[in-house]
Image (tube, rainbow, N blue to C red; front, side, top):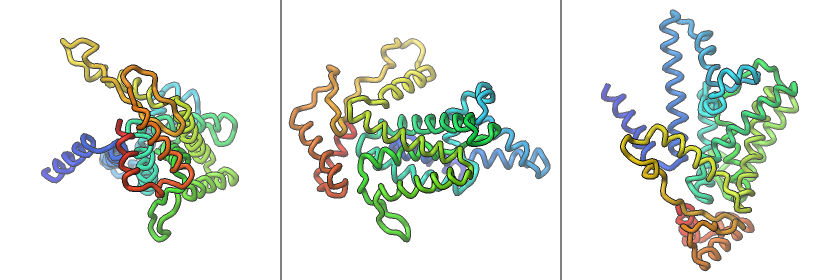
Amino acid sequence: MALFNSIWDDLQYSLRTGNMITKLVVFNFAVFVVTKFAYLIVGGFTMGNPELLYRVGLQYFCIPANVMTLLWQPWSLLTHMFLHDAFWHLVNNLFGLYIFGSIVSDLIGDRRVLALYLLGGLFGGIFFIVSAQLGVLGIGGYALGASAAVMAMGGAALILAPDYRVPLLILGAVKVKYIVLVLVLLDLTAIAGHYDSGGPIAHLAGLILGCIFVYQLRDGRDWAESVNQLLTKITGLFTRKPGKSRRSNRPGPMKATFVGTAKASSRSDVHPTHSFQDQLDAILDKIKSTGYESLSQEEKDFLYEASQK
């Protein structure tokens, strides 16, 4: 019992103090552990034959290809992107989430990570359903996993820092653009061979969403802001305490993070200095032309501080 209490304390600490990438990694892993415990429990009730009942239960949290089925389980649009059944599927996704998500968090701010993850997973899930209606795969299929959300991180990292080098086992340091290219080729090969095409289509949809997310941000349209406002309202329904006014539970003003050619926010609570913006634009232009690794340590520190504002 002491061991489980220690593990639970570690999980709580990671979720409380870690950045959003750490929280997403921990949460995905925790959901995987819960599903495996559920498998063991079902096995006990079914005298060692849990497969059928377990699969039926799992499908209620996977996104279905059939639109009519989706109407009965709309929550699966959200739950499917945190759900993994195979261990190596989980490991691959968490690895991709960590390497791509860390780049995204450093360059455009930790507060945009969750929004990008959710939008990528949702966009991928929608394209999975659309591909089924177009006959790409059978309408009786289901999808689960964070792959589309991770590919959204990959698409964002590709636009933000294509020449950033990621250390990989055996291969050594590999640029982000080559990692993403290999992933895209694998998905296109699967689609061409009609091998589980719904999944690869969802992955590519997530990638496209990630690219568009960054381009929109550079043009001054921050999709994360709307998502975060919605999440704040939803969580506020469960955290608002009796006796306090609604206003006291609203989050304080959030400073803007500037990316690429994005214009300064016109909100009255943001007052960036001209020199700050010029320096930030110069650093982002340098990343675009020569890559993240060309930055000095001072420039990296400045960029990190800017992403936290």
